[in-house]
Image (cartoon, rainbow, N blue to C red; front, side):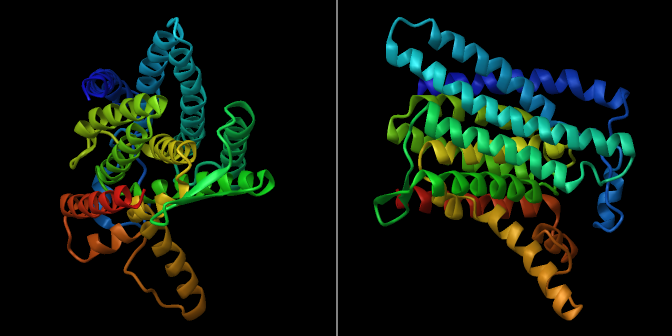
Amino acid sequence: MEFQTKIILLSMAVSIVMALILIPILKKLKVGQLERQEGPQSHLKKQGTPTMGGIIMIITILVVGIFMCFDYYRSEDVQERQVGIHLIPLIAVTIGFGIIGLIDDLKKLIGKNTDGLKPAYKMLGLLIVSVGFSLCLTQFLQIGTDTYIPFFKTSIELPIWLYIPFAVVVMLATTNAVNLTDGVDGLSTSVTTIILTCLTVIGIIYGEKEITVFGSILIGTCLGFLLFNLHPAKIMMGDTGSLLLGGAIASIALYLKIPLLLIIIALVPVIETLSVMIQVRYFKKTGNRVFKMTPIHHHFELCGWKENKIVSVFSLITLICCVIGLMAI
């Protein structure tokens, strides 16, 4: 645990330093949050809060990640060098999703609206990164296409023609779910930090050192960012951060061959996504709403819940789900 703790503390320190440097710069550049008029009225006061905080995550992951890759690659031990090599695609796919989010955030700021990238272009970008990583897993890393079934203590091997689309769907669904979870100060960061911790613990159990290292980098990055993202937030992660974190969760789950476990440990993002789908479908069919507002965290806001209460309850639910998830492996 001492090894993981050092990486977490290093990543946390870099993340904090980056935040202290970038927040004043983003304020000076007037890179402020744009709130939807149809969103909760209480959020309008957040207008102007620095956004694109995911840049802090990108820089931290790159700095610490490159350092760790170089450190492992210098080793004379072949297995240690393999850890460094296997870290590269994990870092690359995470940064790839973050860059798509960054482009989306920049489009919103330049256009002074909340539309951002056209959905088709955004989906195309996410699709390219997802397909690229899926092919890397099967062709370059050759980790196999077997997928673990939670609780049944068994795995099924999918044919390659089925595994690639399956892996792509997992990545697209996860990034979208985490993106929808980002709507209350500290919510997405808190929930994903717990999920990433769970996945890192599983990586330790499985003896996958690259996941132990990568997961620790992400945990430290999120903890450092969270200090500035809790209510009242000094910076928002934007799509830069939410897509990055969604991509990180999905890539680790696929690498560990446990993508189906996300249904359990990422229950909060799953529910957030389902609430939107239910609301849209029901409204189109009846003209009425099931929830006061979606994603569902806004429903609880309009029911009188404070932002800190939503973060605490949703984080506790995630923690319980992660404990159940660990029992399922």
